[in-house]
Image 1 (cartoon, rainbow, N blue to C red):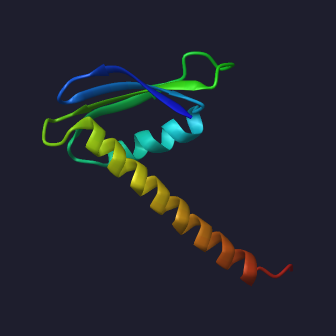
Image 2 (spheres, helix red, strand yellow):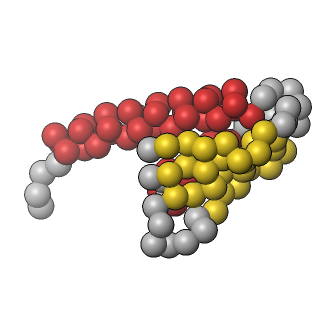
Length: 97
C-alpha cells in the first residue's frame, strides 16, 4: 500500500491510497464522519479496475487532517480486534441444530 499526498492545507487533505478500494476507504470515511472535528470526509475510487482510491478530509480547524486520519485508523484497528474476539467467541459456542 502506498499513500500519495495530492493536496494539503492546515485543515484539508486529499490523498491517493494505492492498493485500497472501497473496503478500507469506506470504513475510514465512516470513522472520520463520527469525529465532531470533521467538516467533511469522503472518498472515491476513480476506476473499478484500478486498485486505488482517493480520500478527502476537511476539518473544522481544531485538529489537523493528519491527526484525525491517524485517530480514525486506530479506531478501525480497535473495531477489527473487537470483531475478531466476537467472532472467535461465537465460533467456539456454535452448535449445529
